Image 1 (tube, one colour):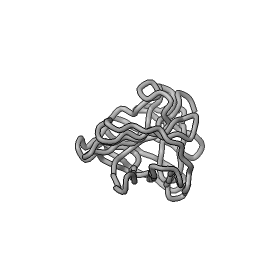
Image 2 (cartoon, one colour; image 1 turned 60 degrees about the vertical axis):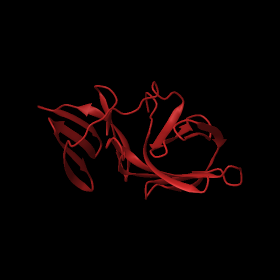
Image 3 (cartoon, one colour; image 1 turned 30 degrees about the vertical axis):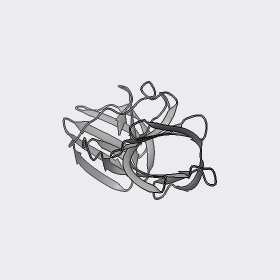
Image 4 (cartoon, one colour; image 1 turned 180 degrees about the vertical axis):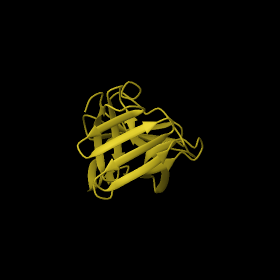
Length: 176
């Protein structure tokens, strides 16, 4: 979930994504759109959907990346040992790949080879163009293996005959 301002909240799950406007509540904060609601007070939260209720406790918190920090980027992924990053442009099917802590930097076109909304999975690749790469993005909790920071997606990069695992997150525009 991400609070984008004092009036709305973005909520992601394997079942979809929603922008919930703030609703009136006696205590805490409540956001609701149709049958989906999110309520929190202190370090406790409750998510209600037609599928049921989910009670949550805050275990970790971090600031989400913004377009101000990553201009022109709609998804950013990263991994360690060796340090690598992938950034998908928000206006063209272009991937920027940095390897070995930024020593190698490539900008390459990509195509979507798999889009499975039910599984929360997207795979992009450059097919027949050299150098070959594939990036698999799976919705689901991921924790950076050095810092322990949580991310909403697992990112697997295949490049140069090697496979690298890391975490990532989508970066929404200022308004959706």
